[in-house]
Amino acid sequence: MSKNMDTEVNNEVYYGIIPVFKNEKLYNGMDIFIILSGISIATWCYTHGGHLGTSMGLAPAVLNTFCTISLASVFVILVCVIATRLGTDIWVYQRTILGKTGCNLFLLAFFFATWGWYAINAKVFGSSMAKLIEALGINVSAVGETLLALLCVALGWYVACRGPVAVRTTNKLMVPCLFAIGFILLILVFNRWSLAELLAMKPVNDVGKSWESYVLIAEWNLAYLFAWYPSLGALPRLCKTERGSYWGSIAGFGITLALFVCIGAVAGLAMSSVGIVSHDPTDWLVYLGGPVVGLLSLVLVGFANISTASAGTYSHVLSSKIIKPDMKYWQLATLWCIWCGILVCWGGIWDNYTIFLAIIGTMAAPAIGLLVTDFYIVRKGKVSMKHLYGVDDPNSCTFTGGFNLVGFGALAAGIIAYFIVYDPFSSAARIALFNYTTATLLACAVSSVTYYLLSRIPSLRSYMKLDTEYNAVSPAQETVAD
Image (tube, rainbow, N blue to C red; front, side):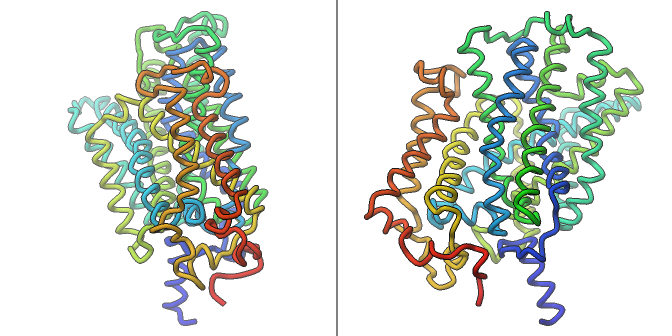
């Protein structure tokens, strides 16, 4: 193979959708933990935690958050193992569930929404940089703060375009900053208030102390966790072992995420007690830390958010390459970052956070249920890579006009179940069943059970191509090209 061809293939492996072979994988479990921590414990943890802290008292908010997120992650992170075992993104695998065209459309709909996370990330970056500049005696207008937020998007684009090694290096440098921010915030809070005082504080937007209120907070936490599933394929596919992928992801996307949301809840509740009802951690740091510690913390926030933007940009752009594989990576990265910039300028994600969270959870919960059920139960961990990539049969994932009607039927059933029990626009249960299942878990379960039952019908099994030679080969026994 010529040097140019070798470079081209490597670029397609790391910037495209070609499967990664074992000897090409870059990350170990610790790398996955560090990089996913960079995504999961970014400043949106404090945004989410701040909402919880102003809605429920300290003890129930922390207990609810840690138990719900860490336990649910045991199931959600099974998605990472699929990407690691196959060496390809979960969005490629979902062609078997939704059909090639259906998968592309679902990805577009989902990604248009999930870039809202990075708009939040950029807004907090802009806020921290604006406060630093104002500390020098220079006033920053609202437009100036927005321009600073757009700078975060641009810097994330720059690092992501330099590839997975640059993403890993940046996160190894920046993730300690994220951890430092959390610990500094916690120390500052407990330096000012005792545990007894924090436990006695009343939330300003109290949802109540009933079981129904507790389940509502659990619903927000579940939607927050499930919403990250688009990022659970692009990076774990580069992990060398399934064990490292699973436990590294559990540590980064499960336990660490839960801990830092809890820190956000503590800080949000404490700050609301002194009249600062804000979900922006930069406001908390400036008030609690004073001129020195507060400003140093803002520097950490600014740099850490760049690493988050780079990891998120890389994973989202890589996943969306399945729509148009021949499109250059940097071009697609540019388009998505422009969309993120539009969301930053709009500002509606920040102002309508719980609705944004519910919209993502509505789509994510059934999709994760379908993924886990299809791979682990219906196909028993066996799938042909040639089938996924249409090597022998270009129409292998076409089904009905590019849509797998069985998969979409199960997906629709889950989404309908979600709206039957929960109204995301008013954050209220529609029927009592919500108080025992939550909307997110019910949607996941309904889509899973529906898909499994449909897969047992002989005519539909044939339609889904479950009884063909495609299912007879495990990914370890073949390559895409002979």
